[in-house]
Amino acid sequence: MAKTPKPLAVRMLEQRGIPHELFQFDPSIRSAAEVARATGVAPREVFKTLVVEQDPPKGKPYLVMMPADSELNLKALAAALGVKKVRMASHADAERYTGLQVGGISALALIGKGFASYIDARATELPHILVSAGQRGFDVRIAVPDLLALTGAKPIAGIGSS
Picture 1 (tube, rainbow, N blue to C red):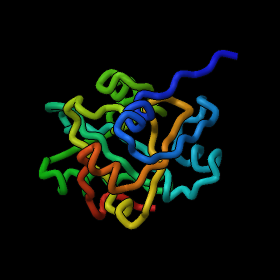
Picture 2 (picture 1 turned 180 degrees about the horizontal axis):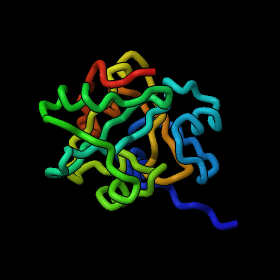
Picture 3 (picture 1 turned 90 degrees about the vertical axis):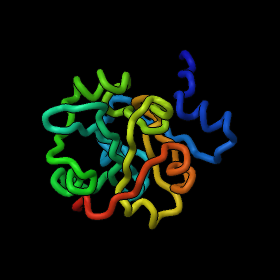
Picture 4 (picture 1 turned 30 degrees about the vertical axis):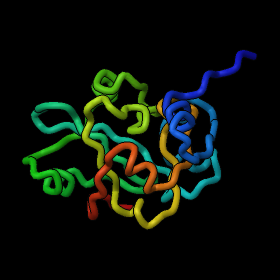
């Protein structure tokens, strides 16, 4: 069986000497809730990366990291960003914008690509979280301060509901 190459985010973390733990699971899994089940990690510690765009689309979309057990409140996000309205990008648009497959979209893999990144502020209450490594079937556990420093993600309170 051919060895799968390391995801881009993992190679970047290794090059920078950032402590992390790699989790591998069935690549057919695309939801963060399923990742939580497959890895045995609590859903509040597994974060999905959502691609959100202004409505109508204007400029580059936003990357928003949310806990697996939470839904994004689009009105609250728009208010926090100071824009009139936002919407979820379609799967096809999310893949086109990021160059990554849905289920593998990762703020870590998109560093330096010009995306504004945001994260549910509840992440700052945790020492580590799991995020996508930029490829379906791979997540990394990383310290929240390291994730924020690398991605420039800004914590926003009140944008998610469980």
